Image 1 (cartoon, rainbow, N blue to C red):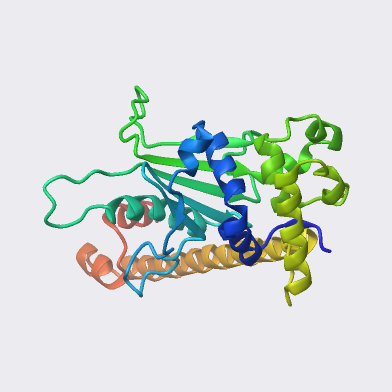
Image 2: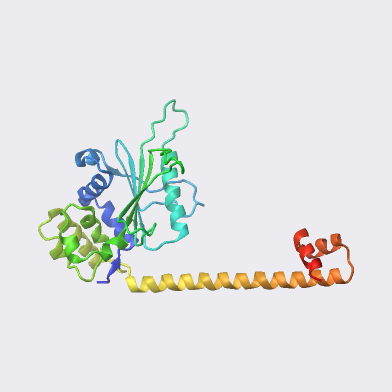
Length: 287
């Protein structure tokens, strides 16, 4: 088996498995600091489409749940991309908006909890869990308690030693989330031995490994290479763009300067070369 972050397909199957609903409820109750039985009450998996517009890219969530008191959405992100960040932010607002039903005199909005399980540290502060809400920047007053985003930093778990994780309580969030990243130094079957719930989770992962035609986990080294290649291409494209802009600017200035030397009026030079008044004066004063 490969070592690394779990792929989207496996993550969705694991989180949405009815036989593992206790596992999901435990994660939610521990993360949101709520009573387990309160969370479990009427928790159900709902349709994952957050918007009916077929033209919106990334309109489907990974695993969307609701119960009597809230809406909870799980998202798995294997690499940091601005597109993923925008998509996850969009989900929170759409999940809130979809609760508003036209014609109803009173609309009771359930809190929306977005749980992002990331294969990176989104804020680069070394924390395991980040909680984000809309707030006023000077006084830090929360604007809306119904919109909450939790970011789980799986990179944090990669760096903990075996003994550090092993010494944590069996129902700690660290141990609950660890299965989403396959570490080379941990035999998960032995690690969770004696923990009935997590034994079932590991068994389900093993079943998926046997049934899958593709990988259960992303190859960490291969994923790192892909990210490096993408960043290199983006960097090269940016450099090429900067060089092109610089050359274009130099050519434009050279043409404008010749026009000035040839005695054309300021209006003519600016109209033909499309330079600014300030650029014109700079070129003229440099003669």
